[in-house]
Amino acid sequence: MKETIGKHGIWNGGGLRAEDPAQRGERAEAAAELEELGFGAIWLGGSSSAAHAAPLLEATSRIVVGTSIQSIWDHAAEDAAASFADLRAAHSGRFVLGLGVSHAKLAERYRRPYSALVAYLDALDAAGMPAGGRVLAALGPRTIELARDRSAGSIPYLITAEQTAKSRELLGTAPLLAPELKVVLESDPARARTLARDYLALYLGLPNYTNNFLRNGFTEDDLKDGGSDRLVDAVFAWGTDDKIRARVDEFIAAGADHVALQVVDGGPRYSLPREGWRRLASLLG
Image (tube, rainbow, N blue to C red; front, side):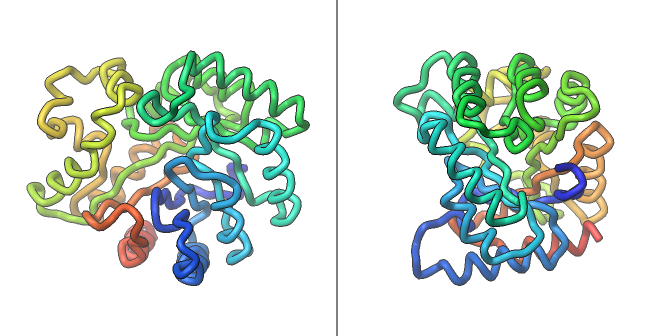
């Protein structure tokens, strides 16, 4: 998998997985352009599924498409295994099933998430799905080790370069480590941090993320008022092209095999920031 997805991908939580039929052509065109721009993977955010990935795979020929994440509470394991098999057969192994436990505020049946994830992986195994075709959204040490032992690797969301290094140490060298990194293509510090805080606000209300920040050296003060400069600067890349490139490289140097880049521009969550993707491809060279 590492060889096929390269170092850089695009994470998109809205436009590429929207279901409005009127936008189907634009989504397909955007996916094809991402492939032409040289990105190795498209990661579909939110509670995405194989159904969201299928049209993008049909519109492209090389780029990998993964869910980031498919919530274990929303899809029966047997159905997930069957959908995976269909897409992988139809598209030369280009579909990756990214799984996660979502959040208590977003999943009505949320309970004992680690145990539920283990049981879900057991069910996938029983349905014949290969561990090498799935990855886990792993934040805490136990889930990282689970990703190491029972999947192709980890696709953590909203982590720092320092936590990337810790994740690599727990994973070992072989599994994929593909963290998400938010990018604000803005060099003015006040403007960049305002855009970042506006976007970060949602996640500061979700204990899975705030507990992870506290576990990794941040304080309660860092979580106040939309996030401290220290927190914002750790989980966003912003600034000049050189500075953004250096932040992406920092994650690679920390042990990431691939960085899933999310453009944050202040636009609606279900938009397609295609100009931002072009700028990002250009600065990454």
